[in-house]
Image (cartoon, rainbow, N blue to C red):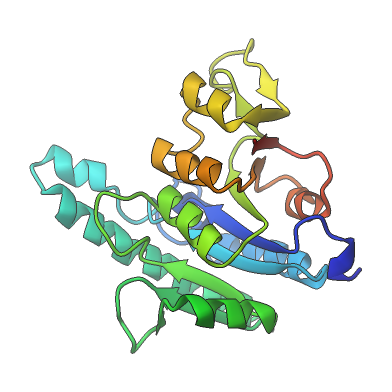
Length: 240
């Protein structure tokens, strides 16, 4: 299949750090990294271009540090460094599968990754390389959800795909409520007004202001990513 058959030809995939974590939700599990790399390779083989923003919650939770009196800025900077560790781990898993990959970071650390430069990131995407964007926005007080929305806009992505552990957006927690109702689609305003905790309000508002569609899906479900880029019904679509 060529990219002309895809609904979304350039995607920004937002992952939580848990996508790389072991069974206890912490650390980096090489087997999970390998499984994730396999999913990304399958999307790449369809002809899609992939940028990835990954969190760092499997390695560091800034909230925990703040509970013990740590300054928010310090906790956030530690979280940014954790995302870079995850980015490098994912890069390694992809390149062991023969997938050309670049890590770019919002905080300069040129001995391990390129600095984030928008035009260079786009050029990598055009050449078929997976671009993993680490260190969030480079600023404290902004989540990796906001970083994902911002980078999606900057690289002209067609869609922001937020990969989670559930198969879409529900009106309540499906893991604790049997009556939880899943939404196939939502407007940005509905998502904000219902406070559904899909992503923080800054990220959601940024997507709304720029008419960037969001798909929330279950990363572990077979074929969920490839179905999404083909435009098939999967997860929950948030749009205008």
